[in-house]
Amino acid sequence: MIRVLLVDDHPVVRSGVAALLGGESSIEVVGAAATGEEALLMVADLAPDVVLCDLRLGEGLDGVGVTEAVRRLPDPPSVLILTTYDNDSDIARAVLAGAAGYLLKDAQPEDIVQGIADAATGKLVLSSDLEGRVVERMSKGVPTVSARELDVLRLVAEGLANREISRQLFISEGTVKTHLVHAFAKLDADSRTAAVAAARRHGLLS
Image 1 (cartoon, rainbow, N blue to C red):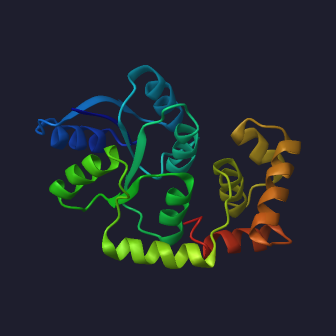
Image 2 (tube, rainbow, N blue to C red):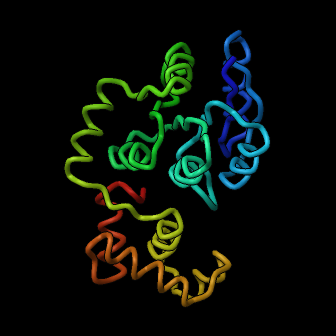
């Protein structure tokens, strides 16, 4: 029996995937989390074999952040990304973070079930089309901008000043500046505008 933890910020999606997997005799859905932070707590409590995680999870950790955190645990479960986003950079970021694979939500139900089974055994789960695109993108290099640095850049893109960003993210202005400095270096940018443009070019910001 493969123990699966679902992670998605949309209740309807969580219910739908749980219903899909509930009909599989080889799979048991042991829990469902709405945020990345909740997912990490549930991983520790429930010891799933596979974490089936969306890429975008609203505020806080995204799917890549969850993957990175989970893979740092002793004897970690596999993380399989299930999302609507098929941006090459997103896929490459997830794989580089240690995800077992990347599936789109419009995949056939049997492909999702097979993907979970493959992820549980340590196989890389990518369609041939996605695999080729990931190899190409990884050969070009993907900036490893952290989830928190992306949070800051998203708010910069909305036109917020450092003080407003610090209030929204509940961090100090100094921490905001530190995140921006790191993001500038990773994106080879010398201004807020250039950093946002580079992040969009790499597919890190929608």
